[in-house]
Length: 267
Image (cartoon, rainbow, N blue to C red; front, side, top):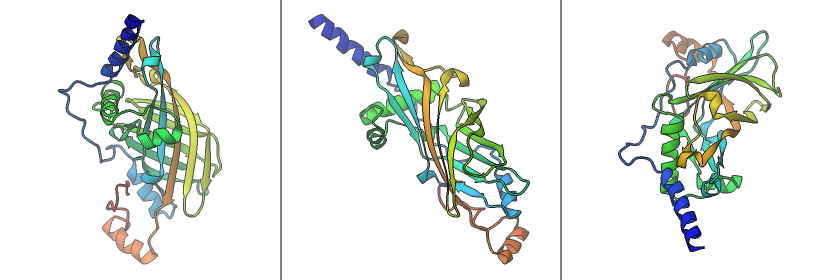
């Protein structure tokens, strides 16, 4: 019994050590700028033409990913809850003969692992120490997502012609440098003040050329399947009065959209 208990304790310790990143690696820089190819001009032009453009509210939006443990020694590992709220981007609904669409992005470095409040609320994930959360996140960013090579997650809502509620919606998701198209069931609610989109889907590491994290020769690993849920909330960008539009049109930018007033992405 003593030898068996010692083995179990040693395996558990090994599982924790496997999550620790090399001490020599510096932390990844946080990204604040949008991708260079982000089509901001598309929404700036749409607003100039009088269409209502909605901006994603990062503080009111969230993506949550459930990462399940697997392998012969799964009991020595942890499930993890990966969350992000810093989703940026724009939406616009269909108008007359023009389709609706959306473009969003998320810096990979905005992903957090097992934030305590989210873990308790979801009843999923591990109540880890701050150091263990940091180590697990560092491994996820470097070894699984390769954040230095692929710093953004991109979501493009392909043109659609039906207003809310509409399900499913066509989406192109770019993750780890790989783009895949899906039709995702969602619930939509759009009012004069907000546009809310919620939904769930499952992804697989292999679909995006990623390798699930493994330790001890694969005896402890993450499942290939990732279960994702999201809530996106957007608010309309106010269209300036006609006189202001004319004055700013001469300057080339509509007011309120040319300079960032908050961490939100502005036109």
